[in-house]
Image 1 (tube, rainbow, N blue to C red):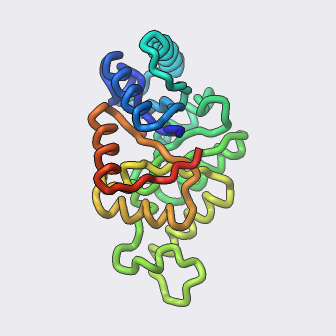
Image 2 (cartoon, rainbow, N blue to C red):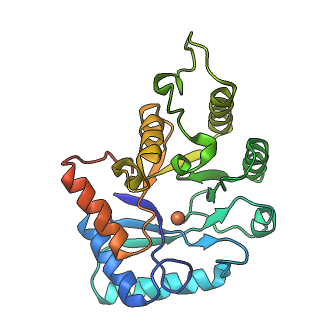
Length: 240
Ligand SMILES: [Fe+2]
């Protein structure tokens, strides 16, 4: 299995502070069945804005330690870019997801739909593919709680609200221009609450997701996902 979203590198963002925890996390991910992990530290100006050179250096150091410790996982570079007014500046020299054309972006809750569309369109025009990180956690994609069945019923006869129509239109637009959508595994186990779980299930049922990841920031978060998965006695089908 491939983990497309993980904060595994030590001392880069709000992931593990030290190498020892990174190694423990990698071992736990291996135990859970992952063999490839994309290391996707935040890039959020003023909060987590370590440069790409430092990310690659941390990646190289971790790769060496994994080999020394015989933890058999392949780690690849990436970043979780915040979709704000600084994105254009950072994407002058983008950190892609490994050797792919994907650029992972996290959409802030306050971002207007039009802004999201334009930013993703610009990324596409630059020859890259936006991979939208955990859309189920963003208000722009939140499922309509009162009218559950109609949220993604594109051809439904039932009248839908203007807000719901806008959400459907946004998802359709992003899909049509070729964006990828990455779901967090923990979302399906209500780790972020029932509302996020509901949206995640809708997006999955309607085949919006193209990739999955743990979005793990610590050993604790990996153990929590593994425990919930075991408790529910079901396995998510992860597309590699
Ligand atoms: Fe993340």
